[in-house]
View 1 (cartoon, rainbow, N blue to C red):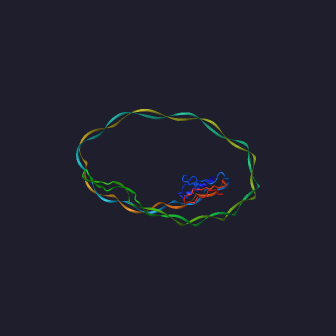
View 2 (tube, rainbow, N blue to C red; view 1 turned 90 degrees about the vertical axis):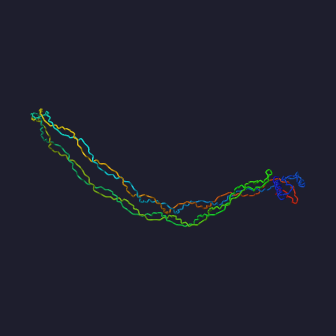
Amino acid sequence: MRHQTLLMAAAGLLALAVNSQADAGYCGAASYKCCPTAACAPCGDYVAAKCCPTTCYQTVRETVYDYQEYNVCRTVYDQCTETTPVSCTRNVYETCYRDECYTVCKPVFQTCYKEVTCQIRKPVFQTCYRQVCCKVRKPVYQTCYRDVCYTVCKPVFNTCYRDVTCTICKPIYETHYRQVNCTTYRTETETKYRDVCYTVCKPVTEYKQVQETCGEWVTTSKQVPGQMVEKCVCDPGTWEWDCSGCRMCYKPGCCRKVCEQLPPTTVCCRTWVPKCVTKTVACTRMEREVRHCQQPYTVCRRVPVCETKNVPYTCVRFEKQCITKQVPYVTCSMTRETCTKRVPYTTCTWTEECHTKQVPYTTCSWTTECITKRVPYTTCSMTQETRTRKVPYTTCRQVCETKMVTKTRCVPRQIVEKKTRCVPRTVCRRVPVQSACAEVAPTCAAPVAVGAAPAAGCGCTR
């Protein structure tokens, strides 16, 4: 029943779309006031309808998403560094000298003399002598001698000998030989060769084509329309008669705002035009190559050799001997002896003597003298002198130089990237629907418009 109701609603909407002047739709699509009488007549006995299970099919639409790959061009900017020679001018300053004369006043000093008479007092010194007597005590030393007796003990040494008998062991050395078997090793050297592998890197140059994206800047000019500006415009005035004053008065017009467009301007813009250039690039790679060579090496081995040799050894035996020898010894005896010696001693006596000596003394007397002396004095006079000096001045000259200026610019290039997106797709499929339909299919009479064909009946599709 639900499916049948949907089909009836769809048929009503279709009839309404075909004739926009239809009186009414069906199944509640419009008002029933304008519905014709024939459309509202009963079409059958629904009570006597026989229910039977019927399989109906319904079209179902589903949205399925598919993965789709697409290419996107993206602009990548590479920084390139260029060294450009730039001519520039540099100021070089030089210091020069010019001769300049100037006058200076130089003082000249001169020494003069004048005679001056003055009195001076001059001391006169005189040395005189007077006699002075004085007594002096003088010691007189005298050396005398006396005899002194003393006793000394004097040792007397005598050397005597006595016989001593002793037994001594005298060593006797004897050399014997014995044969000894010994094993010695002799070193034998042998040269052998072994196979050695080594790897050598060999350069291999290949050429391949590389697509490089470059371009150029194209300058284009375009006109930009001028902006809109509001201006205040006054309408022309009118002359009107003034009854009160009996004269013509001028009445100005109304002021209004008018939009006016300014003249267009020309703008120059630079556009980057990319292009692809194919270049041949040489790539060098190193390939490894295995080589073989014979490398000599030395093998040493020791070979045993048996030898017999005489080894000397020494035997010592002792023999006893009795010997007699004289051993010296010293005897000492003390003898007394009386000696006499002269001992000096000094005696002192004092004697008085009178001495006369002359003592000098100095006397001073003053005398007056008139003297004439020359006194120096200095006179100064200024003289003008012309001198020459070096005056520095700076000159400037321009020198042209070429400098290398490094500039960095961005070079755009296109990179193709692959991206994945989901694309919706609608899929239609029929789904079976279980429903109960009457044995006698009712006739659904749609409202018939004037000049329109009757609507098709809505029934279940088996």
